[in-house]
Length: 473
Image: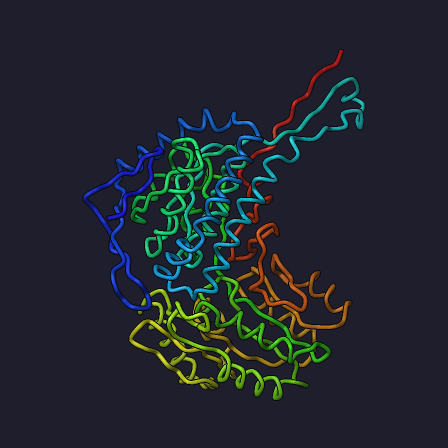
């Protein structure tokens, strides 16, 4: 039985939730579930801790963050094993996630020592003459952080690290399917000397979120997860500052002037890696008619020959299990609906009893099919062709989502045009939209979210500018 972390202590309860390995189906352990009283204790603890954390020096915050990164690095294999076991993430992906998490905390450490504020040129207007102006950012207070199952460590870090760097406090609700990575991180935070109450890691039922959204002690909601849940929570917490990082159905454009043969391994890995369980997984592949037939044949061959599905502990595995059978079955139903409506399936529909779904590639998909216009969150991609570059850009924008998009082209003008026209937050040239590093701004427009993550940008979201004006006379 795994306790949760509250006020710097480990707490056990009688309520618990079993955690299963998505690949083997075995029960790994059970985690204690927090109830209303535990949540109230966590809020009170974080609210009280803010009195201390807001006044910690930059050097103390940075030193703590560096220490966290080092401990994670020292315990790298333990974190990798937990991620593989609870999320079914292929081991090479899990290793990359742990390494990225170390970078997340190290970026936060460096930024904690950054700009302490900036001056305002008060003399720029006549009334300001004789005044001194200074702007400095201040922490908000208690942040409610909610994270998803697919990156159970690094997406937690993208909330926790900026929170510590800015002197805020947090009540973190990890995904109930994958809470073990967050609870292991809590061990590291404790070892590194994070003040008691600053970060509280509590698994609890979704039903208990609503009261937190109207609690005056909670100053911000930072949510990463599904579109419907995110916007519903934002609606309920109308007075809260909110950052939402939600879903998508990312597209990639392949122009005939690109080295499209070299792009195929990147595109396939971005569509099928970790069973496509990423909000920026490639779901729509748009290929110019001039090269469409050649590209399709080469992509199908690559999938058949190179994309390995199976045991996530094997280093050659790219497509491991989906998080559970229900997620797999939903996608199978979508594919069957699409083919019944006229779509062609270019790869076999292989669904195993272990929540595994082999890589799926479809074409001639109706425009209203869920496999095209919704977020699949599965090893599934739809192949489409286009005639002109403008048509391709319009096809990318023809979506209620807007996270990131990729464009493969050797033409600089086309690259700049895509940057100016695509309704997304990240435009990646000669790279897949699944690409992300920890210090870039990341988030969505349209129904994909609001606000930005990426360490610097999350720190800005978690603080507010305050202006000091002194009359020198």
